Image (cartoon, rainbow, N blue to C red):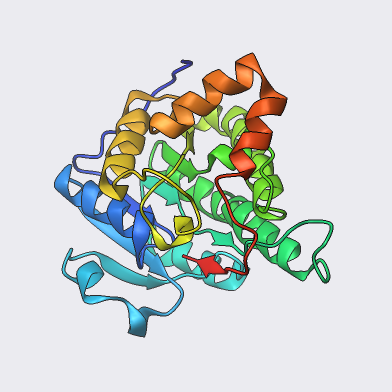
Length: 256
């Protein structure tokens, strides 16, 4: 695994997008347990931030990654940030070709690709001004394997994986690392459509933050992700077809 220079969580100031529940909340909780000095929890509706999030002591920040104005405002408000976790995501469960129109696919691209891009562009100067830092992009097995019934989500996550590599190359000279997390099956509302075993979100967050600290470029965070990488190497067509069978084609919309 290629490595550069990670950022220790202990004493760091961490910002997490999509922090209101699921994996985002787990990143907040895990960062606190690992000794982060300050945590910013980015949520779209601060008034609706759950008690479980407020109990962590995190600073609640209004942040919608599809709104450049709010992202820029967050960059000003959170100017001491040293670690950014791009976790906010959207999954609509729509097919790509058979969908009524392209609205769902465009929405998924806005959140899952342009969202991290907007965040990186806004916070790279913040991190650079403090001598460097780290960015963590929370992705999915769908980023490395085209996945049926994830018509807009899978292409958007694949684009975000490419984004991470390009951002890494541009930001390394400024002391900023970018870690892409390939997440398999995790027990959150967004993954309610997935069959079989699901990992604890806290375990995924712990693995991801540890990989960031080590300066890893990419991390397969759980068994499903590790298994996916191996199966894709052996027989990608068979794996992609099998992966689709884990999902159902019903209507489902989730956003963190």
